[in-house]
Length: 25
View 1 (cartoon, rainbow, N blue to C red):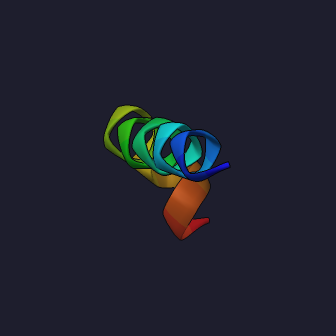
View 2 (cartoon, rainbow, N blue to C red; view 1 turned 30 degrees about the vertical axis):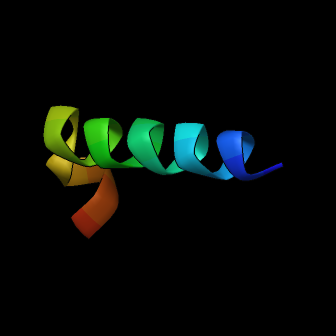
């Protein structure tokens, strides 16, 4: 379960770096 959380967190962080417009709105 923890691996899934870490994986999701990493993906979210990468998405934030890739598309800051979507995160900030």
